[in-house]
Image 1 (tube, rainbow, N blue to C red):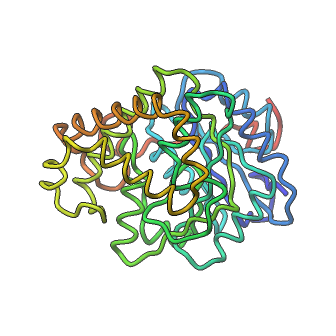
Image 2 (image 1 turned 180 degrees about the vertical axis):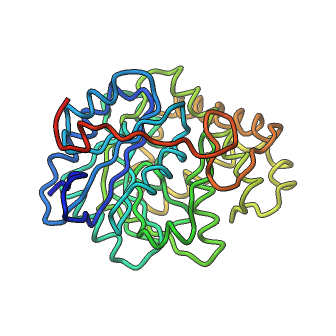
Amino acid sequence: MIVQATDSRRPRVSVTVPAYNSARSIERCLAALARQETSHPFEVLVVDSGDDDTCARAERALPAARILRLPTRAVAPVARNVGARAARGEILAFIDSDAYAADAWIDNVVAAAETGYDLICGSIDNANPHSAVARAEQLLMFNEFLPDLPTSRSWFALSGNMVLPRTSYDRFGPFVAVRAAEDVVFSRRLLAAGGRVLFYPALRASHDNRTRLRPFLRNQFLVGKHTAIARRLVQFDDIDRYWLFLALLPIAPIAKLAKITARMVQRHPRHLLMLGRELPLFAAGLCAYSAGMVAGAVTRAPAAGDGSMYDGRVGRTPHAIESKSAASGGSA
């Protein structure tokens, strides 16, 4: 059951959806949350910093949602921090505006939080399986989080389908305000401080993978760049010396391909067939990712303080304005 802002009941789960010009996908995202059949009371917070009609569409799709408007563009981790501060639940869940929760997602959010782990990541399915580009992106970005993999401990949790108890956020948060790879930074800091991360595939969501080549390559470049920057903020298990990471950059595409292939052989050989079919597109994305890593290696790392950077600047976290129609339970 969805709890509105004016209800006296407190939600057990608070779901934050960061949004920036998400008009194309926000209705489908919220419709999936509205379909949840669960006995656990939950609230939905949409934190928007764009300039399109995302808020109006969100209010139509889910009138009970709390709509929080930021005065200027904010990177996704800032939106998540705003949602976490406004949340009333003891369990914090995060899902991206272009991801669609599966049936029983809320029930699995609660089950994941009850495992005792500090941070839990769900599985990611491909919402566009008809597209070769989308299939290549699935294998390159989400090969560690496919729905048919087993439950296991993980070295990081994707922020697009993430759960943690509020006590974990209070202890290990907030999210560092970088444009991408903030989930890697958050996860690695949590692990370094003694926390534990779990991959919980029953917590399933479908991601609206890119279907056109140019956006796919541009995103891979961005992710590669900020992953390289993240290596200056936190320590990774595979290479624990930054100078060694720089020395190995020339062979980064081959090393990443070898790592993904070995992971598939070990966990699910069936995925190797898909990798073979999509290898040209996969290789193009891998090269874009590696080029981004080179760019990130020569880019100045941002200040990684309290998660208050937004729109490229560091300062006070922007004040969110809650939509009156959503707060009162009415529809737009």
